[in-house]
Length: 120
Image 1 (cartoon, rainbow, N blue to C red):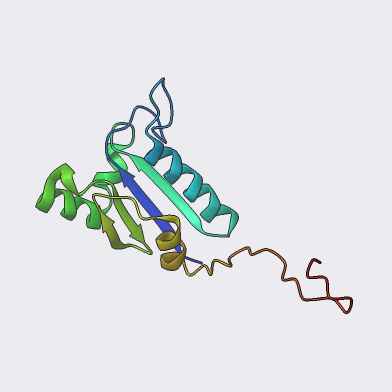
Image 2: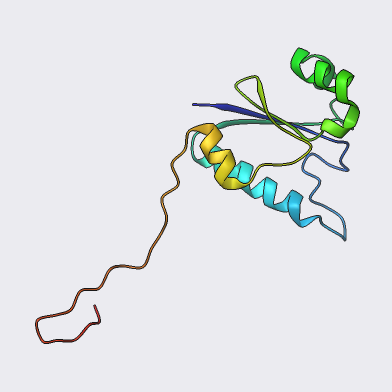
């Protein structure tokens, strides 16, 4: 299974989901990453404010920061390859990158009954 790594810009906490004014995008990303984990994907997340050594210790991330500065954050890697810069992918994109097939949940199909009614 894929390994997804998120290198976040400086955040107040590991997910950025705290305080009185929560950024809805960060809440969505946290939920999407938990969803990936429940689907067997290895997810690692790093916060520049709290884990600068992980940024410096990853050659791909270090090169991106050197070339583009903090504007490239958040930086998303899948299996060590950069797949997104400066934005968080949607759940659908995360799923595709991790090789997960999303099945849509649809209402049960109703077929006309022998008595002519249409409800299940």
